[in-house]
Image 1: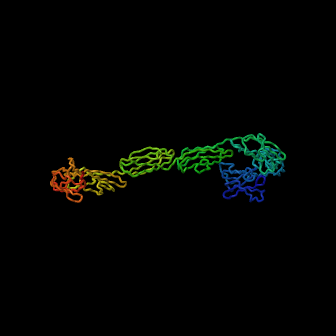
Image 2: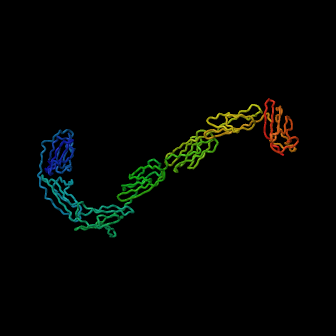
Image 3: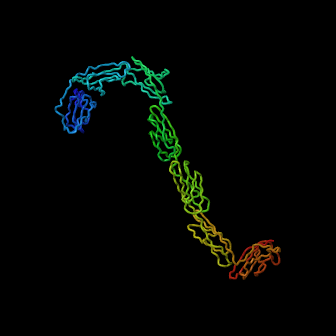
Length: 584
């Protein structure tokens, strides 16, 4: 039992030894059980000592103490490790400990007190000759200052061995002097505020008049708000009391700020460091891309390149402020290009490259696949010519300010021109063996041949002298080359196609101009008019030929037909048929 016989302490074993308190003043003391601490040893006796405290063994080398057994609940202040020993104590306490029962004096008659007007720090006094003072709030001085109405009590011990409890019923019939709670104004804003408060439950009617230094009345409620920095006063009046309180609303200046890179990379997280002063408790970030955050130090990833304005707004108890900063987000998208044409023949026009790169790119580096390279800016077109065939991997590397460089590679097919070899120029003899022309150079893959004669065969049989050419076209883009060969005539006659028998001594006769007459062994020439009538015939190799007459009469101007049969010394013969024009 506690010294005042109002509390009972017991050790209970429920999930480990626990020290519990039972309030005997409660209507149901068992139900009013209060757990005051873990004891660790359920078998120890619990004893009241001469000092009014309760002791128990809490461990082999520990004694616990209840410092204020008369107080309710944890206010009794149980300390399970109050006293320590170097050797074990077992489970008991000495049987010789006397049990002292204090003479209990009835609590002094409650004293009713009324505080005067606007009293702050009203004092309550206990008997100064006692000791072990304990007020209901746990304080231990004989004097206690209060500033609110209510019931207050103090317990203490007085000589010789008596227990006292004094109770004070204090009222403030004229009210309690209000406290003024001030919120300073932010510089440049009219958001200063002041509020008069009294204790909760106060029934006194207060009348308030708030004024500035110019005696302007600003409010008649318990709150003054939306004012700038300056001197103010509050006139407070109740039924019995009247006073004026002077106060000052100060001005504060607070700003938000942040750090962030001015150039960021698309798709890479960008961190924002909030440098605002400590007065701001709420933040709103607008990242400029329809995204926002309420975090003090957020991170954000921009999905698209461009320029963005970052807006940070901070709000605190006093100030609201906004700051802005513009950042540039570089593109992370790889640049590409269009090659036109992407298939070309050696020696043809240059390939045009059209870069497709974000405008944030600093420069472009080109590798054309043939050992040549080029640095360029953001030009619309780059051109390059190839002088050798092959598969050309063209790489364009895009350099940015913040983002790492990106590369794009495409292939240009450069096809070599087909090679043609018809052999050296040669000669052909009339009625001799024909000459067979063909490309002596092997051409891989698909190709087409076109001879100057219109033939498309692999070989061409030549029986007449002349200049012959071969054009070879290869797939798939039609690269072509042309080669010519000259075939001269060996042992041949030359036949004109016109003559003028006008007696001027020039070209007066039609007769083949024999160049190697020694090879001609037989000769016959016949001339026919347009109606097929034979008008001239000769077999002389050294004659003058036709003079344009028939039976001594000059034939009219016009076209005539000739047939010439020639035999050569090698036994070959050849017939020539054609037209001769007679001009007058």
